[in-house]
Image 1 (spheres, rainbow, N blue to C red):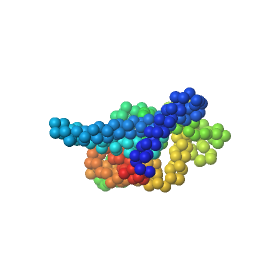
Image 2: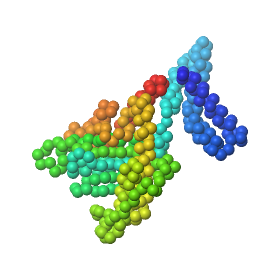
Image 3: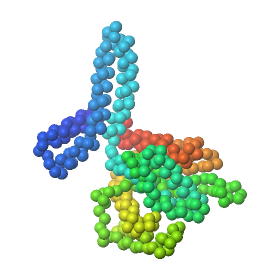
Image 4: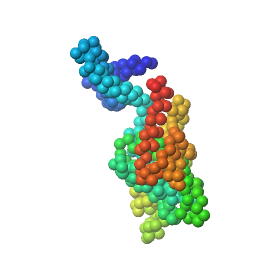
Length: 354
């Protein structure tokens, strides 16, 4: 379908929904569904109308070129409008792309060391801190759900909820294997070691997103391990929840309250089940899968942090930045912006909008 025809149909559908809702004849679930569809179309229609308005202004300005007294003024106006038209045209095209309804959500971040022993655990802790600083830079709330510290102040497992608008849209590209190359502090010969850390980013799920049958859960309580003094030794506050149909196991011991640990574990379980559903849906859409630059497969090596050379390389788009110190301070935006642009370009091509 031609772009102009698609735009006409979207505007017409928006007008139709508005008329239906204003008539007073729609009620209950029908009204809710219409309201939701109208809200989703509203920003697209706004972009279309702004583009059409600019096109009309461009046409009017061109008509003035035949007037000797107005030609110079018209030429200047045409240059300004043409610059606006380029941006508005891109805005309309992007607005037409299929939306991931999870993009607007908060996210759950999970980080674990993979290959490399103590060095992997140390880098996992540093990367966890880098994402916290990234959240701080954006004004997002970073709530630690679980932080299992290893020897030498490394990290065995770190889980956090990152809350804010469109958090998942920004963080989703971080899922995968992150590789670090550097000389460990414990290395006496000065040899460079390679270690890996896995990062998983999941959209936060609501209870309505995933139906969990209590009968499918096995819940075990036990005494927490690690630091914690008397609380660790005497209180069975740690909780382990096993979702038997999927085999997913979530253990939580960060809180001193068994009730709070269970609530956190259920939150993570819900997010993992929701992400599993999303992964199955994505796998069934071949065109969508081809358009992805890597946003979910935690076994995919996505990035290398080379400390001796001071560089960070994202392998999905062959982007290298020689500013590893800034990235480790939480400045991921340049990488994420490039990944977002690459994803949008691929989606535009898949939708025939390029």
